[in-house]
Amino acid sequence: MIRFATIGTNWITEEFIKAAKEVPGFVLRAVYSRTEEKAKEFAAKVGAPLTFTSLEEMAKCEEIDAVYIASPNSLHAEQAILLMNHGKHVLCEKPMASNTKEVQAMIEAARKNNVVLMEAMKTTLLPNFQAIRKHLHKIGKIRRYFASYCQYSSRYDAYKQGIVLNAFNPTFSSGSLMDLGVYCLYPMVVLFGKPKSLKANSVLLESGVDGEGSIVLDYGEMDAVIMYSKITNSYIPSEIQGEEGSIIIDAIHTPQKVEIRYRDGRTEDITEAQTHHPMYYEAKEFIELIQNGKRESAINSHAHSLTTIEIIEQARKQTGILFPADR
Image (tube, rainbow, N blue to C red):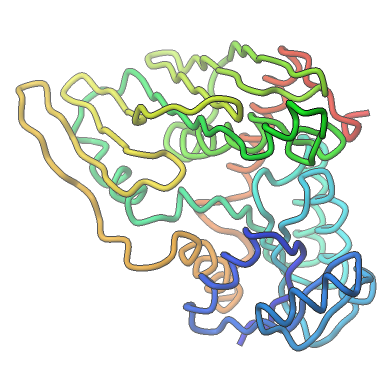
């Protein structure tokens, strides 16, 4: 049994717990919140026997093996390193941290303490992403990767009324590239590796975060184009274009339908059945790594996380997005 604690009392933590309970070996032991009232309320909701308001205390607790972190992006590195220094395995929500320096420090802490550190990027562990990888050779020489994730944020209405919530506050290392663009970038890195160069554009809001943006990435014989937004919606699918055909992906963050359209007019549905909650697969991967004595996922690897944050940081530098964590 792998005894878990969670950081974060929002809907994403609730969804993770719901999904992880389907994985053999998962046991929820504790929840952390800064206030006792919130911790107790959330623990009652999700069925956790222990609550903590001190991260130090939780890190020292011998009844916890692993921690799922879903706090604001700016807190990931500090919290993860503290926990890993106390021998806890860490599954950390995407993006892994604010910048490259923080991700490097997290990877070093994981190696030093001989624990698992994995970025909780669900997309790359879903059955339909595996289908994309398996059938990629069928579309011939790849010429373009195109991914779009544009979703109008429910918090943007508050922002327009002068209330700056976490999602639009640079103090928490947030914004559309960090929160949504990462879903376009990480699968690209897993499929095609590190680009040679990139050109980024962003629409900056008065608070200092990006409301939306796009990046064109050069891979030599192919390019990649990604678009992301928290202030508009988009309804177009993502696509990998090859010389013999294209793979059409309904939604890059959680692909449910994937098909190949060949140049000769044929179509092939390559969709795989997704029998579990989308977050089940990341929980399963993480738990199995611990159980099998491995220290790193082959798919959501340290190298993939590092390359992704390097791209994000380069794009932020080009477009003038600066976080307090960068200073």
